Image (tube, rainbow, N blue to C red; front, side):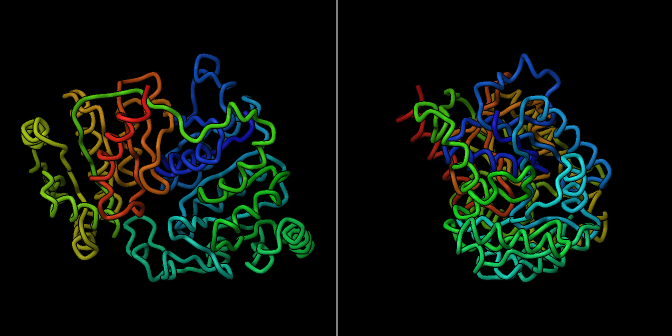
Length: 432
């Protein structure tokens, strides 16, 4: 294994694994730290491993402990470089968890300098002069300002990260990145001389990410969104036979029922839910306030689901707009409301799979984490991309199940429909 990755949520892990596979690296995603290295996962056949954790919003010390456990396991597997992956919208709070986990990994690796770059231009995430943009909007003016767990109200990443770490944070600006690896190395040397240990890196296009890759060749620890993988992977392809390089991994065929679970309240997922309904898709809304009073009967939801599933794919969603979300949080508290949705979606996923669902789409990082854990999934094989950052995956060593784990912010408005039409095309033309 060449590249070892630690992701702070499950959809983000899949996003990163997708980019690594597209770049040509044979990649496996594990769910948590595997218990048995040997049996597993036949580590030797992979160029990169992505360990998916659910640490984005848990207490800081728990996030540190789990990340260090993943690091220890990856080092035992022979990792040569560590990649700490977080969201392309830098989801965190002034308390963490990006800064504290980065510091802990730096300490464990005896690393005196690293970078932080959430840019993913293909998905509309760019960093310029240290400010993060979502499309044409500053992060602080985008829908992320209303995120239920990690509201992002400051687009200045140097300032955001400095609030989370004791180490000095600096900037590698766009004009330096555009000059290539030599200029980036010179900038890093200058920053280190100023006492800087972590540098936000500007990137507004894939060419910037490609330029960044060679400059990171010898860096023990990289922290980033999934975009940096585009350039970084090329460092490893020199050591991999062209015969072994992959563009996508073939998935097994899984006929069966199809369902979507949406727990995210992002603008993108709200648009996807609306499009699905406007297109005539069967949909069932989960009333979060009813969950709090046990007024929602999961068995009743399943009776509806089983009737509809026999005819077409279904959507079960707790997605709602910012105004309604604020009302729910005022009554229940953000953490309690989120936990209720996660628990319900996890239970529904178990029931749906038991009822014959073999193609399941899950929207929302926290929701995806709860679902994957509830299903007891240990590893995922990465398949074809649906939209940037979101591939189909196949469960390894578990139930015959294809999964699409979507970050709440990702995907076009027709994403849910596209998932199944694309899978139909893929099965007709490429699966063996």
